[in-house]
Image (cartoon, rainbow, N blue to C red; front, side):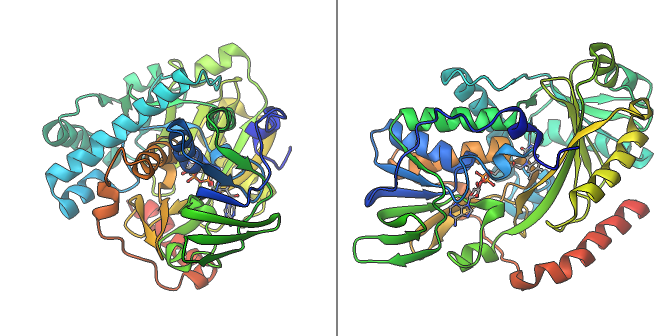
Length: 424
Ligand SMILES: Cc1cc2nc3c(=O)[nH]c(=O)nc-3n(C[C@H](O)[C@H](O)[C@H](O)COP(=O)(O)OP(=O)(O)OC[C@H]3O[C@@H](n4cnc5c(N)ncnc54)[C@H](O)[C@@H]3O)c2cc1C
């Protein structure tokens, strides 16, 4: 079993990506080359803007080449919590925005001809306990009445076998809006699109210091210094306190872990997911899983909230859970075990804002494939004057206390969620 992400093992960062040297100056410096940074760069460069993307490792290194590749409606914050906090009208706006985000990815993949296994075959949320199915019933009704969204379809336990080859669940809520892709091929395709429009992509350029100057900013990297008029911090779960302490206090890096099996025979793929659906369950500590474009079972979850669990140990824990869902996979070898860092905010909402004039955009939880893509695109539109702002900038942004001590208290938070799962 390889302890590296499946996706970048299958597809290396293309050798012919248009990479650049560090320039002396740029109008916009984007720190981080995931979906947020590259979508913003694509828009700005497309309008003829001068933009440089700085990446500490290789292009797409972070969560954007490590995730489950599942695009599903909604934000990390539960929709009813949004309605309570911001009012029904704003909640409806956020809900519809999350649907637009998936359409946006669909459009960009088509426009840029990105070959990333994109397929819109829907997902099913799976009830882990009978009470969770009753919750699904209420949720479906609520979405229809309040969001005007009648796409979720309630699936009773008896019909569930048409959706999933597992007897572990008590029903489901299916939604055909969702789609899946290979995240690394998507992020590399975006990088190529941004580069072809003129964005400079600079690897091994981790920003270690940012200073304000009369003209803008001076950024220090191991490759030298760069002067920039504007800066966008697009580092999400990889944000460190050294360059942006305020932004870091708004975002918590949380580890998510995935295993993959070897490619499965077609008949078995069909048995596991007869309609090619993707899945997640209704636990606090949820598992998410799907058949990959190349026919493997890819099975993920938050083993604990830390970012440092060993990959052998995380594979053992995930495999145990995988076999509870799909006993028919017993004996099928695992080929990969890997992890990456999600960015989670205190109120579970994405946020954009400014720290000492420098912009940041982050906080997508497990919804970043579509949400980071769309928010990055909107940041690009804000920089080019095509959009004046965003509701994600206007909502209050509560911060975490004690971000420097997260390693100490995250295990307690993790235990709390385990207890909730056991009790619910
Ligand atoms: C295991 C896993 C599974 C997931 N599954 C899903 C899923 O199925 N569906 C979904 O919608 N979302 C999922 N997500 C979330 C999603 O992947 C992220 O929300 C999204 O990729 C965030 O994109 P981003 O561009 O904001 O950040 P990232 O892609 O994390 O990019 C940040 C980049 O910033 C770079 N960086 C950091 N500091 C510096 C610095 N000082 N200088 C230069 N560069 C720097 C990092 O190296 C990194 O490449 C998952 C995440 C993980 C980790």
